[in-house]
Length: 200
Picture (tube, rainbow, N blue to C red):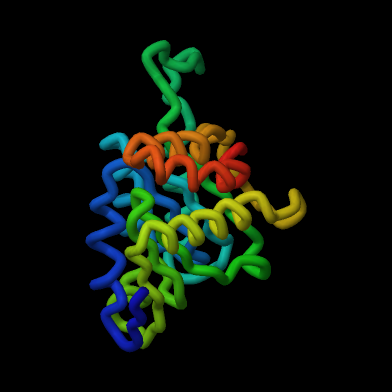
């Protein structure tokens, strides 16, 4: 575990996040449209992504939310029919009433995580003085994943302005299966007690 305080927190977030190969978990109350487009590009190259954000009216938030919402909608022909070849992207989002989300969490491929004060904006990553905690130990990263899962399932319907249709419902199970495929037999035995976190 490392800490960082000052400007330039993005040097510990941006490259790692957008270099994800398998999955990324993002919680940022404010995401600018520039980063929303990069999230979409990440999904389009096959990375599974979940995003928790808010309806906070700041900057180009309206544009960001529209980008995320439109991305999961199927393209239709002139008669309004969904194109046969379309498949939903591996992407889920939840837009929360801004009063109820303040956490900033970034998890990448189960081996890197950052928490702290930095939003996914140019100001949050590069201009503001922020404080973040960086996790590289897989056990610590897994703990942050547990926290993210808890937050994903935490909100009541009245606190959620909009959400996608839970395309990645089995993501937690797939995360555990992927991790176990990388483990030795001894490590697998020690992880059995953690399975309950990934059943959703």
